[in-house]
Length: 102
Image (cartoon, rainbow, N blue to C red; front, side, top):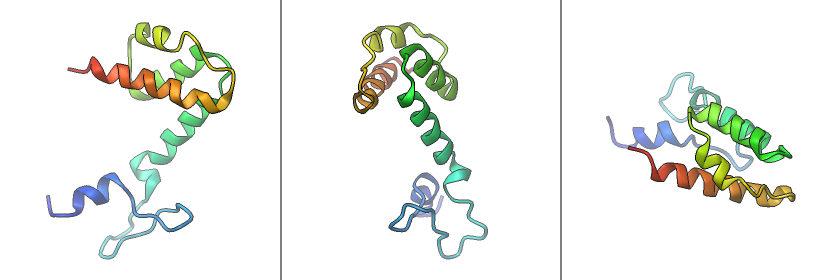
């Protein structure tokens, strides 16, 4: 892989407004939608907006292919009533999930 290609594939260049920008020498660069960035962002928003932790966990588990809900039930037992605190709860859960990856 050429130097700089990894960065291009993993992190799309964006302008000040956050819109994906085509890089020089790339034909028909599809932007964030091609990488699934936009779709994952929408799923996280849906999970954060859920009033029930079970539904939020289901959305994320389906998106990431997590089969067991044991850790989700443990980590999301106390689902924050305030929306602004929910991303932290989701982050703690996903961090705990990452500890058990092979």
